[in-house]
Length: 184
Image (cartoon, rainbow, N blue to C red):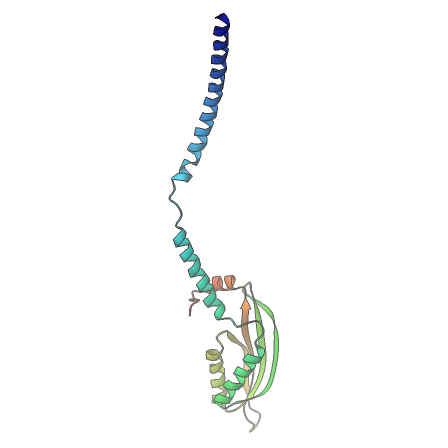
């Protein structure tokens, strides 16, 4: 019987030690739960809303990209300028094209640079310049001069830079900083 009492006492003592250790572990776990409770109590994220916002942003980027022609469309642009000149009644007598990247306000773009020489009536040459803006949305005229030697036909010499694709994310940011709507 004494042996049973000693055995019982040993088991009770062992269980008490285990219980004490478990109590400390429980306290540590309770402290960890208290630490993460604020995170768990936050409302679940709006997955559907986030997906809708992502789709909106992707559509906005696509609209922005649509405004930028592809990398090398020099033939299409050249044909477009020939058609514009013919429709206005002026003649392109010289055309040099170069392609390459430029950096504009920390945004790198691929550009096509056209050095053009045209002949025709002064009013029609000015109409050609106006027509470039409406036909080529990403065109920028970096220089232009009209000369008339004696009684010769007026001549327009100009440099047209057509912006092609670049870093669209940074381009959209720059457009928004300038207060311009990227959707037109």
